[in-house]
Length: 357
Image (cartoon, rainbow, N blue to C red; front, side, top):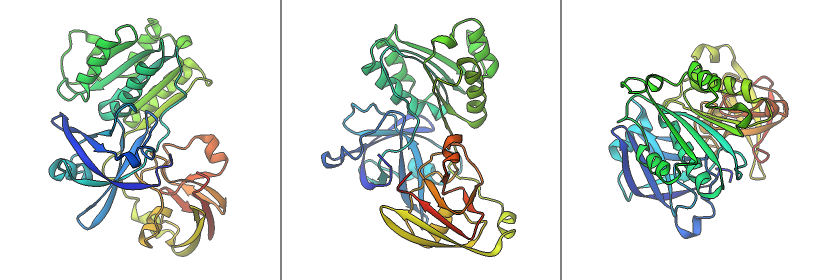
């Protein structure tokens, strides 16, 4: 499942989760079900022409793989071009270009695991897919979810989570935190902080030696803080999976960074689906994806923010620098992998292989 193929899928159902969050269910025809088979924790990339420009965004899959069709959760982003279109214009029966599932926010799910999940806001979307799947298929697994929101009314998938809790009382622990709404339990009032997690560990409500894996999904500061805390307590051998939010509108690189390289041209050779192509960069301040789009060359990409890893590729020749990186692990960079949406050449010739991504 590479996420490189795409099809037009029909919107079967639109369902509001909160006033500013919606779930889209796509009908997957029988002949495409194999292509859209996914691992809980993965995402879909959507594409739509909006105001004469083709826009792409990634959204995590919320459905359980047992479902006939496939669903995603979307939160409205103020002034966000794509989410505004979804909320204002999309109707049941419409079609969107949907790329096949991709993403690495998963591990090897097994029986008898003790898993910790920390989510904020729409970060629950991939996590509810994982929780549903693990509770349904993995015997004697124990799940603890720490889920932060502003208010009860703004909590995505609360009904589904409570239903899962009622069906799996012994195996699922739900812990809600609300930042601007008073709570009977003072500990659950406010954001999920490193101090609160440390408190849970000190009181043995989270026992590091019994944890088999941790999943973190939310804003950057929360994810980075939680990742450090859990890594310090559970060690290096146990998986800590993380996924960050990114804005609907990705921050554009500063123009002054491009000016520094203006007038220097670079040849980029691309290998994708067994075919080699060439891209000319106008300057070394231009990233690979932007250069490809300018020359109408199709490459895999989605978030354009260094977070989703859809554009991961291997540098065979030459050197590149990464402007941002929120998804590649250190070992991947050491082996020569880069993100085309953030890669800027340091040499006059670069050869990238997307087939070994």
